[in-house]
Image (tube, rainbow over all chains, first blue to last red):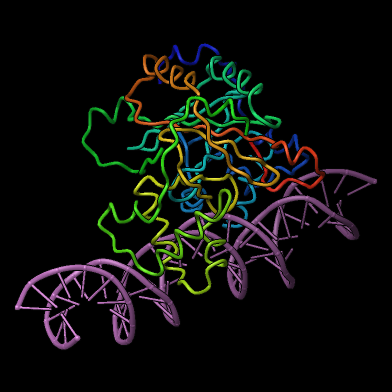
Length: 156
Length: 156
DNA sequence: CTGATTATTGATACCAAGTATCACTGGACG
DNA sequence: CGTCCAGTGATACTTGGTATCAATAATCAG
């Protein structure tokens, strides 16, 4: 992702273990393994992928830990159209995602115009806006130089 | 949804059975039952809901027919954050959705500014944009007058 | 109309993702 | 150190959806 896109970003210090502790949860071996693995991964991942990577940690614990991290706002859950949802570390307070339809790489961005659109829509919609979500499907720069077939189908 | 929102809309004549025939699929009793039921429903629905409503049609056929309709562009598939995806008839060529987090009602809208945002992002993103998706979570007008609890959790 | 051809159906079995249960374990803390 | 309770993980279960395949229904040529 181009650096210019991140101009409006206030990046957060990321420590997933702390995010759990802040919620009053104990720092245990299993949780440290899960958060450590997530921080070690470069991008987005699925729950099953994490289970495979951490055979020493039970499935239930992996799923529970992910849920805690999502509840804490430290992870974003991205409902991809087909297949299991993906998760990515929430580095930016409120943001949207770019998803490469070939390699699955997920990026974050903020764009003030999106928020302006929301404010203008608020006047027209019959009801209260309580949130929004936006995903941009791309073929990322590095995939443009390759010839692999698509990973996700995109019906938009 | 406010009528003003639909101003940018070119509404399409909707005939799901024709959408299937246009793809070279036969007009059968089961498919007519499924498309008829979908057209009869007021808003968005899940595949399982359709199966329950049509006990005379097999699960496999319901799922197959939905898939055909999505492929034909006659239905939109909406990945709600938790639970099964919802489907709604695509009345407008390219559009976005409002989703009431209480009653699950789904609306469509077009807003030219969203497309303008896409064009400005295209210059900044490292890669090719191949599509985008936007959902606005709302509490719709009719739900504002009630006191039911939320149906969907919204982490945005 | 009749029979041949082929798409479609739906019961069944299956698979994948995720959750509930519950006896056991190990952190925290007096 | 011992107690207590949060946390764990094996297991069984649920849900959403797909593959299989024999039976059935559309379609079409004659």
